Length: 377
Image (cartoon, rainbow, N blue to C red):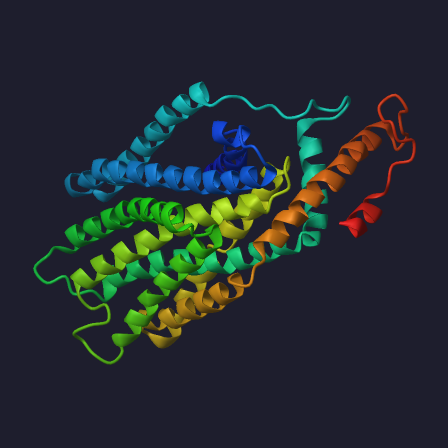
């Protein structure tokens, strides 16, 4: 139940991003359509990067509050206290969000329908037709593998900290605590740094994602050095801290700009449905990497071999990602939004009326079928 609610929270949180960008005051006063598109793309990156930066700052504060409990309480009491404190943290900032976030209601619910039924019908239809949005579909497939490769590094790093790393005179608990702090600190800084680069040298969202993955590729390559020498290649505690700082800086910007890039590829009005697929491909791949790493460690006896898997997933993924045609994806999303969503609304009324068209509710006595609409798109 907790994981389901947690996933729904991020789904709805992400779905707000394109709405906030489109309603930004500077976007609404844009003089031309091209200026409006450019401003929306910039604001998507700005809001997303700042949102993640603030989120990582919050995680740093919470880590500082919770880690000391691990030193003064037994393991079970520390777990319980930290989980309780995390719950209080969520409640406090949820209340602030509910109070200050403006409501943006969608269209009225069709007569005789329910929110649950309509949501499932529309999600199913979107799933059936998502392949017509070729670039959006390609993004989701690549996101499945890239997010797995990026996040499994954190799991491997934690295993290294406990198994492979020589901390010298530093207690392991202190070394781990510093590592836990370095990742979110540099993730927040990485978001701000890449937003600065976007503003100054006009990097695209796609370029930011490619650069972040490329930087992350340095980490498994550095780990390969450890096969041949003991003085470098992730054997010492300071190397893991360097690893955590680079990983955090790349991860933060990767998350924020991948999300803002996906927002450009979403048909207007279908943000929740498409961010459902975004979260499914993200969280749906979270078991793949750890499973592969566990199998590799079990069969080879060396956790370092998992770097081969990480490198392969990220290298192939970023090469394919570089070929995504974002402008084509934006055009496909606009066509889908204007041609198909209108028909879906008509189809919702048909389901309620048992397939009979109500002449008072539509000006077209003979609506075009979904199949024809999809062929046109």
